[in-house]
Image 1 (cartoon, rainbow, N blue to C red):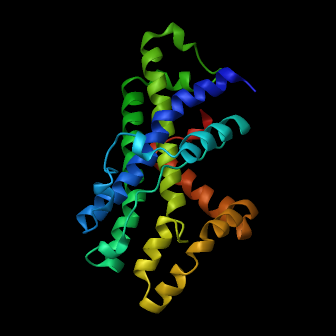
Image 2: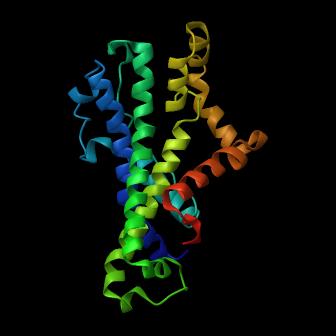
Length: 241
């Protein structure tokens, strides 16, 4: 294990990860507040201050463990879920769709913004792309502009990656993921109740689908979708860097 590489990965990934998960949760609470449920606002969760959102396990320990265990190839984490009382919503079934969809939509917008900045910087200084590929160009220490802009570009890449992963993963239509709640809101009443009833087992189903990959669920559907969206946003394959 290269401790310097791990420290570098943490320094590049920390801010994009925090912004992605915190803004995802704040978006849920903000839309819920607009739709009649003030729970998140009253508990002080409509804030960009990371402290109320940090989950010691999901925001710190799990990402660091995965970063070390996988040498930076796979990292996952989460913030404390923003509390939403769906019964306070003015039209619970319909408003649930907007509240649930707000998180992934925010992540997608953030990914597009990061991608636009990434493209803009490379348009202004195309030579920086060679500094992003290990061993393919001169050292960043030989170029003052690269010393400043390469870390920003790497953080923008992480911003695109994390936000796209969160958006796509959370829209898997299995409760309690956001996509599952959207599905519950869209289905007719009887089917909606039946779909909502699987929520206590939802995470076990999701873990099984990811680890066992039945019918290529992860390898043939979710991963290619994430890759396609990232390439569309960035205009390049992000995994060549």
